[in-house]
Each structure stands twice: as C-alpha cells, then as structure tokens.
Image 1 (cartoon, one colour):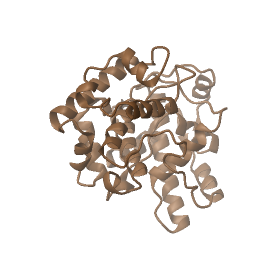
Image 2 (tube, rainbow, N blue to C red):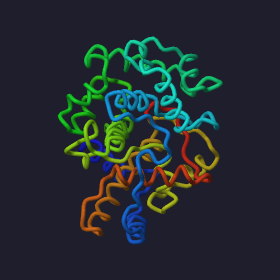
Image 3 (cartoon, rainbow, N blue to C red):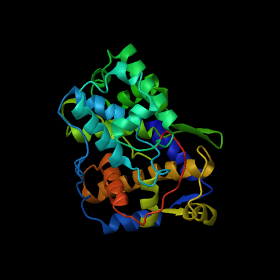
Length: 305
C-alpha cells in the first residue's frame, strides 16, 4: 500500500486541476469529534453467513462493484441485494464453474434487472476471469485466496492483483505510474467489516489500507472544502460531462482524494490520541455521500470504480 500512498502524494504535488487544501483539512479536523461509527452493513443489503460462502459472495460483489451511474436507476444497493437474493435462492450460483459460463442475460436475471447493465460485457468478462482463476489456483474458493494471505491485507491486495488482472487499478500520470487498487482494497475492507475483524476478516495490518478512490468520496471532500477544483473541471462535473479514464483530471480526482484523507487521518489520530483507520474514514465519507441526493460527482466509464 506504500505504492498507493506514495504515488497519490506525487500526483497531489504535481496536480493541475485538483488542489488538496491544507487549510480545509485543518478546518474539517478541528470541527469534528470522534469519527461516527458506521456499521458495515448499515442498510442490511449484504449476504452474510459467517463462513466461506460470504467470502465468495464478497469477491463476486467486488468484481462487479463499478460504474453504476450510466443507468440512473441502478446503484450499489441493487448489486449487493440482488447478489444476496441470488445466493439465498441457489447456494451454488457463485461456484467457480458457474461464473466461467455466466452470460449477460443471466447476470441481469440474477440481479432482477430489466435491461442491459452499464459495461455489461466487461462485467461478464471479469466474472469469467474470477471463475477461471479461482478454479485454477484456489480450488474454486475465494476463502482459500483469503487464507493464503496469512492475515495480511497488503499480501491479499498483492495476491488479488497478481492473479486477477481486472483488479489492477493503476494509471500513467505525467510519466509516473499511479496505483489506486480500489476494488482490491474494498474486498479487504468488506471482509474486515463483515466479519468484524475476526476469522476471514482478521488482518494484522488493516491500518495499511487506504480509502477506496471512487466517485462519491472526491465529491464529499470537495463539499467539505478539502478538495478544490479548477474552474474547467468544476464546469465539466456540473455539466454532467464525461471525463476520460486515465486522463489527468480523472487520476487527480482519485489520487488527491487518497492523499487528502491520509492527511486527515494523521491529524485526526493526533487530535484523538489514538490511531484512526483510513477504512473507517472511507466508510464514513461514503455513507455521508450516498445520503446526499444533491451531491454531484464526476462521470467516468471505468471498470475500476
């Protein structure tokens, strides 16, 4: 995760369109008390049985956890609850051999969605990839993938990105490689949250995980005065115009969010006199954002978030 922190800091120091506002960070930190505790499944939309099937569910969920905005009626809740219902109906639905053969119409049927999903072909490709590699290297079970990391979040991110190319969330920015790994990191965060830091969710280095750079967190940080946008970027977002994946603007929005929250975490930890986890800040910021109907986020067609 040092790669994520260091490359995000480099972007923040060379950014042309997004500014991390140190005064804004200090103001936010000065105005908040203890970080509100947000329960992982506060909406009751996830499958959980305290065992390996939950791990399989979470890995499939996080393989598909990206790009809902092109369909105004579709959101993360539809995905999480739809997959939950599918698994409750058929415990074998996410077996590796089934994942390798699933089609777009079948995925829509599982989710009870009436029309093609955004980036549907990519979602199917990624499910095939997950099924194939789980069968080839982990006896078909995501729980074996998790067991092989030795309770290290850093090692699990490395294993996921090594074995599953669809999780390799990085970009080239002004000649530098930038690592963000949103969906690989959110798999760890989901395990940690679902299992409450025990069993499959026990990681000795959970503090190494950064926030998961997506659409919502940058918009919340801007609303808080932590991020400031150039007038051109602000206009693009306010006009609901698309921003190209891998563009300077898109990389800056995500990387500057990671860097800003790392700075917030450091100051909050000093203020409270105890360590604060980035994963806790991420859940708090994300939960705040999805409850704000007027929040305007950037729009990028991407399989990574």
